[in-house]
Image (spheres, rainbow, N blue to C red):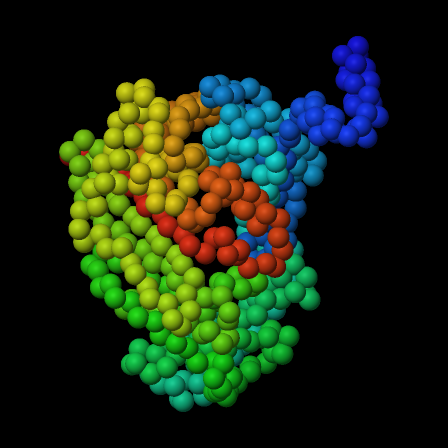
Length: 434
């Protein structure tokens, strides 16, 4: 009590003296040191089909000291929130959103501030969504566009009559429904948006006319992709909107079509994978994802794994060997190329532990509660993967976490430009060594 009274008196004196010219800045600095930094976060359970959410009061947070030991276990309050003293960025945090599932995420060297909203998606909450189901007759469109593949909400629609459902948290915020005609014969592709409030329920069938694709706004533009790789898994284009990804491309071959007059923000995502064997670590999967914003003038360049990309593979294998030998210092700056996050995942079946860290530093060994360790020991084979990813932006992992926190708080907002350039490179063990 005596200490608290002394601090109160000191704060009062500093505030009173704050008007005295040059001492003002110094006084503010002293006050800032006396007020501890805090870490805040919110945990919710969210419906899969809409944005309905309720507080997740089951979440558990483990605070780790700088050496990785358990400092304290925190339980969220009745609103699913935490607000705790967080002295510096040398501390680490482990999040368990559902204590009934063995899925953990740990964040090394976490800075104080708002850590955002964590969403645990559950189908059981879909009953609280407001949904509208519609039935469409596509026969006229099929007749007028026989060489096109019809997709609605990203799924191919082969039947003449199809049903689709859209959901929102209220009956007044239903999302737009996207319908797209992708040409497999070199003809132009077309796209349109359907307003669910203009169509009746399943009690009636609406004949969609071909005229919804008329006009310059509806016509797509195909972009050139120079790469034809045997390791290419997919190339997808989509529009980044407040309703989420729309007009997701649908081609058997790697083709990219955007609709620049219908959507102002178009992006392309591509993935390449290669499997090879290692005598020590076993069967390895090398996986790369790239995403970028595009327009009609974009030239798309994809990295090709048809060559042996040994630099990344050797760096990750050396990192794993170091960890096995008890050496935790690492430095991936030379191969990060603008990426700012290291992710290490251990798992098996329904056990996953995701650890996020800067691309250089010390990979601290975190201590978990013994009850969690006992569950982990039940899994005889634990897979391992490491990835380096990021958005080629300034600010390192702290800025990445800040942007994620900001995005998690938004409602009906498209992804920020910060996330537009994205690149991930990952190495995973997918089988034991022979």
